Length: 170
Image (cartoon, rainbow, N blue to C red; front, top):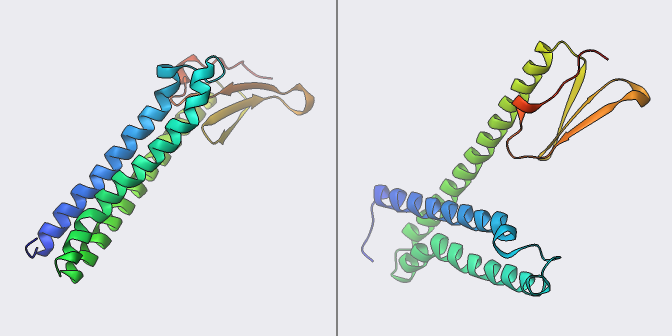
């Protein structure tokens, strides 16, 4: 591999980091929809037997693919005698991965905060005494005091804000 200038290293490291993020997204998409594709393991004994095998195989394949995407070019550069470029390429790739993951986390936090802010605004408009608690991906609403609490539980990735039935008063 010929020597690369800093712009080429940055460009290629961004491409490698984006490739890793896209691969992670595709694997996540597959894992989230695997139950729809193959059925529940409880319903199908064959699926129950092969599920751990598929998961472990996917884990090994993912390690190989992401390892190649993150370490492939730096190893080639290192073996060709470009040790400083190899280290810089590797560090740039890690930096871009960190930056992309951090921006995804902030984006998800922003969406969650905006959904909860919208929900609180809807609750305040209804003029009702309701508490909101966000735990993991589940949203709990409760109103009332003490033993007379009524609960509603929402466990969706997109909260059904328009369909929430909120009683007036207590």
